[in-house]
Amino acid sequence: MAEGITGQSLASLFDLDMKSITELARSGIVVRSGVRGRYLLPASVRNYIKHLREIAAGRQGNELNSVDENSKLKIAQRRNYDLKNSILEGSAIPYEAIAPAWARVVRAIRSAMLAVPGKARFRLQHLTPRDAEVIGEIIRDQLEAAALTDQPPTINGDAHAAALAND
Image (cartoon, rainbow, N blue to C red; front, side, top):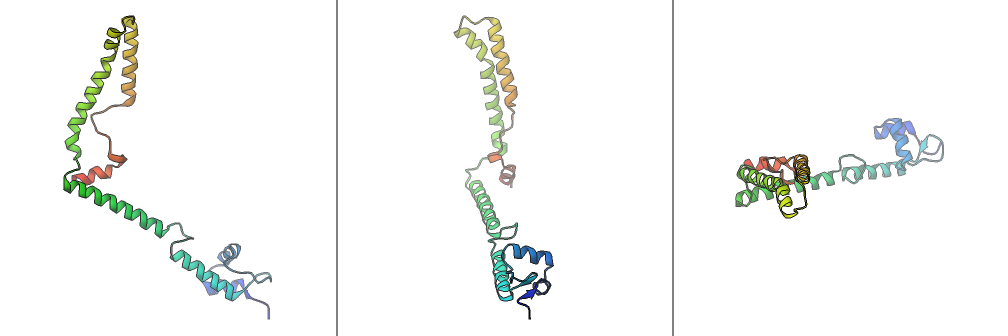
């Protein structure tokens, strides 16, 4: 009798196809017997069961790692609870409450920046009217590039947090 079990028999036992048996053999889970196309049954079964346990425990072999996914879920739940608690305590400020204040801040910054050329010309009397005009153009370009709006920025880039604050 030949040593070991055939690949086809092992595939049938594990309910796999031959390609999977070949891949398992490459990774060392299924143990070759030394005879072409034959595998050691006890060692292969033991290794395959161990491999399946590792996958079930979330330690290897699948793209969805349950341990990582569970920790991400717990972090998201914690953030959610913290946000809801801050709303209940009154320490969170609703978006609608800060929007008018934000608009006033933006307008004040814009006015202050647009006043720089005149103030610079007053303090640095050697500047020509053209110099003040160039400084004004630079400031206007920078304000435009910064795209200041009347809208406050999102909290941590998370629009979902703002939506939760309204609930």
